Amino acid sequence: MSKILEVKDLHVSFKTYKGEVKAVRGVDFHLNKGETIAIVGESGCGKSVTSQTIMRLIPNPPGVIKQGEIIFEGTDLTKASEKQMEKIRGSEISMIFQDPMTSLNPTLTIGTQIMEGLIKHQKLDKKTAREKAIEMLRLVGIPSPESRLDQYPHQFSGGMRQRAMIAIALACQPKVLIADEPTTALDVTIQAQIIDLMKALQEKTGTSIILITHDLGVVADIADRVVVMYAGKVVESGKLEEIFYQPKHPYTWGLLGSMPRLDLSRDQELLPIMGTPPNLLDPPQGCPFAARCQHAMSICTQEMPELDEVSSTHQVACWLQHPMAPEVKPPTAAVG
Ligand code: SF4
Ligand code: MG
Image (cartoon, rainbow, N blue to C red):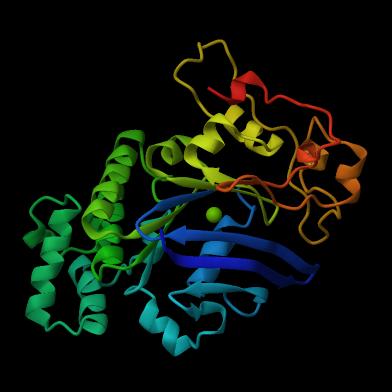
């Protein structure tokens, strides 16, 4: 499989009046053509910052790319000019957000917003763009698209707005789609429909997808591979089965343990992970999860564990992988 996007040793910080928040601290992952990866972790782990950095949507100041590369088809996006990025955004790499109201323009009709990219990037004339926009709305399952085209975002329901945003994002057939919590604001039935829609569109268009989410149910449904982030770092990554059935990092165990499961009876409580992530103004020198980890050893607070290979597709950054470490089994609740 060939790589379409590769993030290498990415560091992103935000300057604040309190100091420098090191939001992303050396992140590595790649996306293959046609696959879906999920980036998971609690809010503040750097998953959204990473995806916004790929799109170069981090406002500078206060945000700054301190180090690293984002290679998209041979071009390092961290060094691309704003002009180059304007060409790439929407046509080569598109993004959909959690809340369509923040990214849809309330003053323009849905049709105008779909047609914009088609006219700008694909140089379609207005009439052809309009036909294509109707086709896109139909594709994302919006009934009577001809009349819906001239309506404004506020005339659409939440689920319909999300569909419209997907139509805008996919109109130019981007090679990469970044979906940041695309279903979080929606009820469960609509969530499932949107995920099915993304899967169907991927089959049709071959788009590679980066899905940012904290919802492991959604991950299980759609991802080929999973990247687990914590405190601005990748702590584990692997194929879906590796992460769900052979998780190695105590934080991943925690995430899986806090996942709602159909086989839990009502009186079995979900276990949230106790404690809070470290302050990224002053991140710990050792493992960032140490303060919350039941298995922390003395080395954990002293030295940061490196990402090590468990297999050619599975990596983990945890001192428990060290040959001298005591053997610790994941809690049974985590694997199932
Ligand atoms: Fe826990 Fe240590 Fe592994 Fe960090 S390195 S997750 S503190 S065992
Ligand atoms: Mg976020």
